[in-house]
Image (cartoon, rainbow, N blue to C red; front, side, top):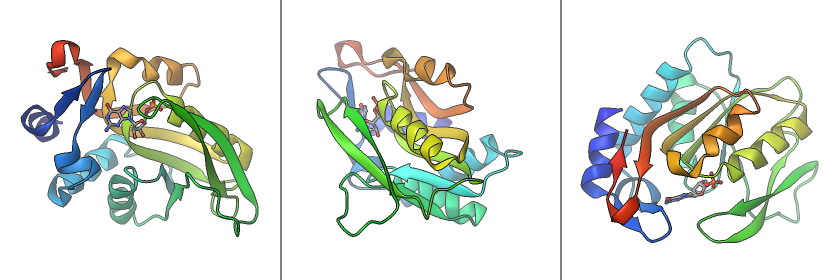
Length: 188
Ligand code: 5GP
């Protein structure tokens, strides 16, 4: 997606350890016009796929997910990173965070993710694929079907897509970062 690539090149910043900071338009300040274009592109790429629910993880996945849900007129569920004491029928899994170097629990209420659901997962980044694998676990626990995974930015050099390929999932990324070596952003 050309507009996204140009924005990453213009406003993205590299950090040690292969981290790309896009706080200017995705992760802190958000650009709703770009976010809408991102959602339109996701809708185009998953056209023809039967979907009845959008799933994401808080916090940064929520903005693109709600835009996609709005366009498709479908409910959006976000997996929570803190287990609420009041949640009943909880499904949970553990995810390792590459950016924070720690594990955390992710949970979702089984009332909102259940058998028969055809789920499209949307998130900001695909890196090593750990968050995505947690989502696969939650969807499996619910007896739902994961029909696709859409990422705004994929860091190809961290090989998450290869992990996901083994599950046979339809994966789409709107901008693929080849390398952040020497703090230079190389986009495919
Ligand atoms: P993974 O689980 O695929 O290794 O990493 C995906 C999650 O980690 C994303 O949901 C995102 O929040 C975070 N993440 C991974 N790499 C980056 C990065 O380079 N920049 C930012 N801002 N977040 C990242």
